[in-house]
Image (cartoon, rainbow, N blue to C red; front, top):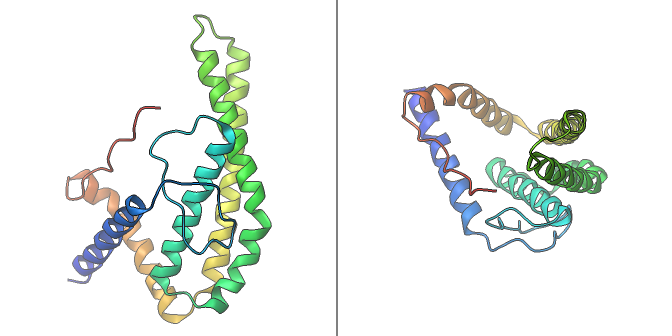
Length: 185
């Protein structure tokens, strides 16, 4: 019974978060790390690294907004999280922009009949290193959020983590449909 209730709650949260994400208007320039209203998705891959970085950071800001709402974080809790976000916001934006530029370069090289393997390999390594740097920033943000949680909020986080571990099994047997396909890039 408990697992069923947790699955229903989590499914509702996932459905709600998807609905909220789709309801936002197209993204414009980011409002910065203190954005009160998150920007929406652009619907397709941006044409340049700057727009790609803005889109990715906007996705992170939307996620932070949903987390704030889910945990019902107080302004005091947000004040404890904000310094971590502000400290690394510009770095996250630059990393996403750089990664987009490298991915574009890789796509262009792969169009060649005989792409240079050394250059291809180096681009793949460089992209992976940027992904790892982004993961560190996200992990730091997660740690800052977790450190700010109190009593019931910590219990909610533990329930979400439990559900996250069992969701693949439910997807694997078709109880939860796969996410919709992304548009071709």
